[in-house]
Length: 397
Ligand SMILES: *Cc1c(COP(=O)(O)O)cnc(C)c1O
Picture 1 (tube, rainbow, N blue to C red):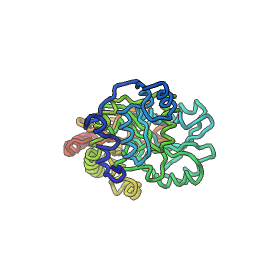
Picture 2: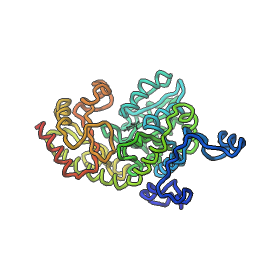
Picture 3: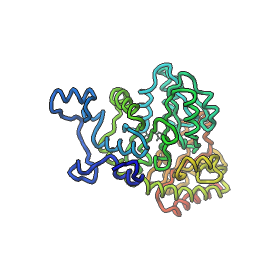
Picture 4: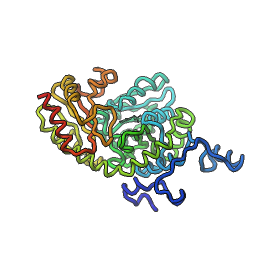
């Protein structure tokens, strides 16, 4: 079957797996094996040398993990993917593969907190220079590119403040000025809502921990791109540097979660739209950042770039840190938690809950308001979620 012609939901269930090659098993078998046996010394040499396709050792590849990789590559419209043990594993493995002392990395002002630490504190210790620009302003990105810029990395939407980057314009801006590779962390959107490669990016990163697995029971990540880039990331990066391979049992859970990605995302989006509209009417709320609202700063871009506005909302309470703390402590159904994309609704107030990660200075640099609350809207009945939010807001009034 030509997978390019099949629909997204069909591919999320079938791509990369043929039951007839596995005793007819409809569910992907978990290959619990660390190594593989060879027919002969010659075959071993050919496999290890990469002249013959096939498994060698599970740090470099595993049949269950391979199904997940092929499925995710097809869903993002890419040639290949390499799955790793966490989202941070994906980002750091990419960095160790592509960057060398003296190279420059250009990133957006807002990044996931772990990525922020990696690029601002850890990579510079190895002689890699990180430049920062506001990626909602392509002219600023253009001016920040130099001859040594090897990698451009950003999120869209950004975690946690829901800024949106115009992937097509940024990709064109970077290409006009350099040969840097363009990597987009697409965790917030999933390929169901947005495919960065269609807009000109080279590499897509995901924390599979979030929407793609969707059930809050696995930590995992992936790097997706051309066969050439993925081969380098798999070999020089994952196999020989970070060693951050994914367990086949976790790959199985993610394949299971992925089967329902589209119906889950439809429901996340449905619930989030209703909640965003409700928050916008509250007198305690200064601003709601949700791409499905006409008041969203980049509403027109959202309609071009995303199929639906997603399940994440950021909003700013009028009373700053204290209002945020009070609100978050008053929630009864939304869990106070760091993750996102689960069936359960989750809430985060960075200024109080992550005050050691996002200091006052970090919050200012990353454009995170003191009263900013992040919601990962789950799959519950929306009336119950609204009642919980209404109660927590009433404590502030
Ligand atoms: C969670 C997250 C990560 C890190 O992923 P882990 O699986 O937790 O290592 C990276 N980027 C974004 C946008 C995230 O939300």
